[in-house]
Amino acid sequence: MALWGGRFKTASSDIFKEFNDSLPFDHLLVQQDIQGSIGWSKAIQQAGVLTLEEQQQMEQALLDLSAKVAAGESDILTSGAEDVHSWVEAELTTQLGDIARKLHTGRSRNDQVATDLRLWSREQVDILIDALNSCQQQLLTLAENNQEHILPGYTHLQRAQPIRFAHWCLAYIEMFKRDSSRLTDARKRMNQCPLGSGALAGTTYDIDRYELAQSLGFDGPCVNSLDAVSDRDFVLEILFAASASMMHLSRFAEDLIFFNSGEANFITLGDQVTSGSSLMPQKKNPDALELIRGKCGRVYGALQGLLVTLKGLPMAYNKDLQEDKEGLFETVGQWHSCLVMAGEVINSIEINSARCQKAAREGYANATELADYLVDKGVPFRTAHEISGQVVLYAIKQQEPIESLRLDELKQFSPLIEQDVYPVLELEYLVDKRNILGGTGKQPVSNIIAQYRHNLGTSDYLVRDAKLTDLRAISKLVDYWAAKEENLPRAEDELIKSIRDFAVIEVNGQVCGCAALYIYSTGLAEVRSLGVSINYQGKGYGKALVEHLLERAKTLALSKLLVLTRKPEFFARLGFEPGNKEHLPEKVMKDCDLCHRQDNCDETALLYNLNNGHPLAIQVTQVN
Image 1 (cartoon, rainbow, N blue to C red):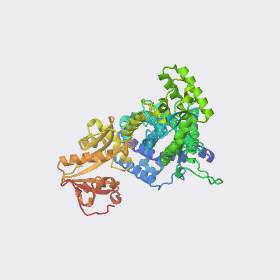
Image 2: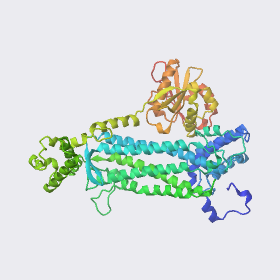
Image 3: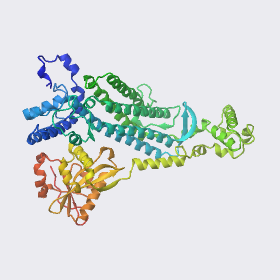
Image 4: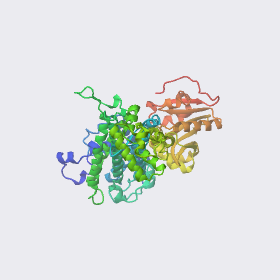
């Protein structure tokens, strides 16, 4: 079904339809289109276009459609729809009839797709930041476990000076940190809502665009309708961040391919990330790393392609912008898969310590130390540099490292060389002499590892009771996880009234998690609306929030604590025991009787007894 057929006398040709339709790729935006449509239905209801009953019917139908898509029960690609927007509207019309035809009032596909793409991009940025942080964690563990290993450092692919292997690991952590910061910055700029901009000039309906933006988790609305519908800077920023990061991954891959080669043999890659040859049985090829290196070009191509597409576009929307998606979708997928594979490679690495040390000694890397030794004896640096170079020539001729030369051999180049030169020429001395911040010495490397472990591991955080100024952050968290059906949606006015029920996790001044303690009249309380931002998962923040609420419940002399959850194992680790929600009439009457999943509930009830500080022992009943 096309959304624009009224003005046309004949249908599109099959050739044009195939050429024009975007459903084969923009179907990836279906959940974002549904999310945006729910937000728009609320906005036009407040503007008087929909009655409250119509809006509620529409929202429920959209939620049902979202669940159907998530369960893989929809035939989007075989529907014959022009794009994801027309498919969603067609499905909604099938369910609701003429009510669904009101949804597009005041909205254009131009501001709709711009909103969908920002919502999708925002979700993917959070996933990518998490993957980059995971890579940093894995490199940090590799560095932490291999601080003693020394190998040659290179310039011009020639052995230069010895470095700790951990120092090499930390260099790539620095690169991935920059990649993550670029995405964080891009996320801030993209988190503005285009919806309400119409085709290009705004809408005539009285839409509260600030409230609309907030309902979709944006920081605010785009303030110029022309720019809002035609802007794809946020896509370019993701593609540039991807290109820079893939360049880092490619360099990382190239280093490890060389380190793993028979010529270097500094490391051994695990069987799980290598493959063999169909002809040569002795081969063990670093295919994972070569593919990471190879995929870099495809990401560069997507960036260049979109830059060329955008450079000549007049204001405002043009169909050329349909070409923004395929390159973005593929890039995000390739980048994420490369980060995951890089982590697999990191976890498989074994250091060949003896070979690393031998290579570090063979490269005459201690020639600089010999020159510095002579400078300490009063020789001008240029003269010392020349003497050290002559020693290197002699050592090469003798096929010996400098530290293996006898003292009389060294003295022929300078009478100032004494027995005390030998400790200076030792490998560990060369490395640990560079004991300055940023250097490869043992102490600075150890300090940076400890700093990274703090930053990437257990960051400083604050658990506290919520304040009214936290409302926006709490609303975003609740809406996000409600859209994922991990908790119930809460209207903003309900959140305002219950703000004293909430606790939040604050990291570096930013609220990144929340949970509420709702108290019933019988001494029972419920843990509700527990959610932690995607980028802050896996750090124990959810546990800290629940423990904070447990302490509050004890202070209030409550008797029991309840939770309904799809993740019972998480709460079980905190001392909650399986329960039966049918034994809790106040809960059933308050919420469950109103829930559309009442007859098909997939949540498990768990209880915590606060009277004696131990879990409540009750009959275990399967919750359906």
